[in-house]
Length: 329
Image 1 (cartoon, helix red, strand yellow):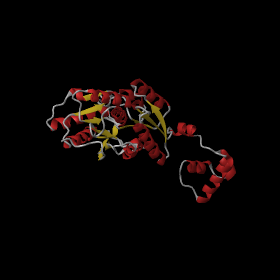
Image 2 (image 1 turned 135 degrees about the vertical axis):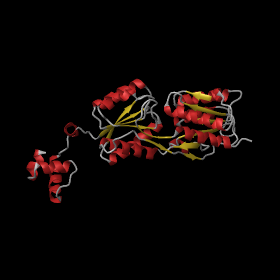
Image 3 (image 1 turned 135 degrees about the horizontal axis):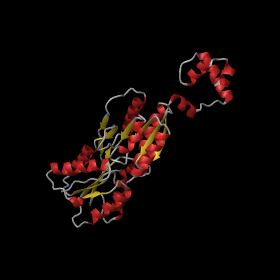
């Protein structure tokens, strides 16, 4: 900055004001920008962060970076943060609570301004280091069972209810579900499945509820189990995008076909859903809007504009019609 001062003849205060986004006289702006270009001046963001106690970096923790859903959310979060001059530091929790806790401590040690989390854990105790340092936190897609934090998600229970209701309206009664019993979204979607079946007066058959962590491997194995049953279901709700990929692969490898032998409905209309045939019935989440709202909430907390009780925002979902569900006579 002193080099820029010597080259322009302007005060350090004026140069500092310009570099920090303040308004300066047009002629001074021209002089400063010319000097910066000639001197190849770059702001030392680490030093600036130490002085201002603000790094303009947001930590983003995802439950599993291999999950296509997580990757899409990261894209939208990064896109939104850039609009406000923030960067992001990404940590992959690898679907492990221990790694998630380590990642949290890592981000706190890097003095991030805030943290956005797609959590693995269903309890918020591991966030204590961030709370101690008063680092704002916003949850996306999942919330905790024991503590309230700012959270942006969908109502998973209602979303699953509506999906099962479509199958019921097509006269299906032998309906199965493949979903996680160790993750918030999966547990809520199983509840929605059970609610729809009860409301229709249909007995819930425990052998039709197939559980395991959301993954293509679990979707594949559990679909094979369902197809091997002597009283196999006529329709299956698949709990998330990865589960759906595995489930469809298992159907394609079997002697059965969709929707002639088995109807399928899943979550998240991501890239491959537009490629496969038959086209799938899907529960569609407004992922971009969810990320925009999560960043908005976090930046309000960072700028001290949003003090007060935790805010939970639930978006609605849409059903994308396809050809993977047929009516049963």
